[in-house]
Image (cartoon, rainbow, N blue to C red; front, side, top):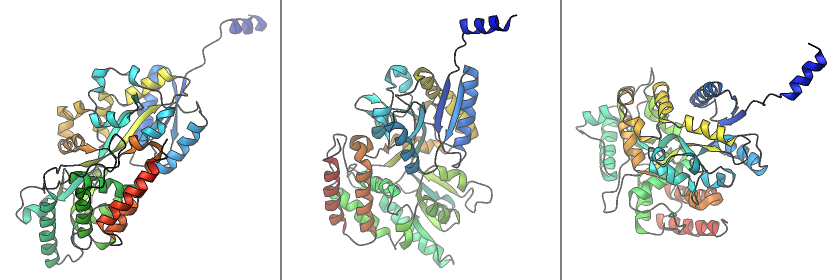
Length: 421
């Protein structure tokens, strides 16, 4: 065939450009979730005849947010799907496609309600829940049994009594570095998470309610913070005020702690080959106050999948998000990883229950999880959280009383929220 005629025919019947989706997924440097997400997303794309480009994001969430905000500020179509933290929906909402028309109401009901509530901003469904996270109480089952306890603590008073007794006994047996309880007390977002659990479990609210009102000026908040201050140097090491998650985990994993507050990621590490506490620990819901109004409370964590409002291929991007958050894929992830599902039906699957029996507790924790006031405070959440962890840290170190901290927090949070719009 004449080459001129050949090229003319090509011009007359041009081929469609292939759809290219770009997924800004979890970092490949953290826990294997990045590599897993890339693998399953690329496999789905091949089946759909789509080209997928995986964008490996920074491991630190603040660096990831800064990167995303550059794309959002430029209204860039270069990323179709973002993996966002549970505290970012209000920040991301102006740049997110509303997923409400794309998901059946019956399908949405399978997700834990607290995530859907968290991910709705002014009626807009900003993202779908990808994997779950919430605060847990880890405890040495063997030590509780050795000291005559047949269940983990249900209240903070029970935790204190158990921790004091076992700590005293283990030190008398020669472990002079043994402590009763470790948690995250450094001046950062992790302390806001711990403080929210203490306050909510005492019936003190969530610092800012869903209507945007500052609610922390009440006696229960003072009691919760004063209680945590007493732990430091008594059942918790003095250095706990500088601890992050890994500091607490390392101390617990080396066998020197009875109770630990941490996230679900720690379970696999504590159960790994060579771990001194492998087979000796279990998890439970965090304790509550014994007073009226007390409740079990766990700070909600986890990551969500959002479709960019600027995507050139919104329908394909939504299809990818629906696939990655589907019950079938979450069950597959349960076989291959220990990240918590965001769908209730996955916890009810007999195969999943055999693989991860401790997820029975995790499901209870997610049912009682408490969201940080990020949606209602929007772009001012970082300032609100900073006001919380700054003041709480001053209580823990003895610089302020709990009453002083509550007054100062209220002033700073109200000042931040005055300009939130």
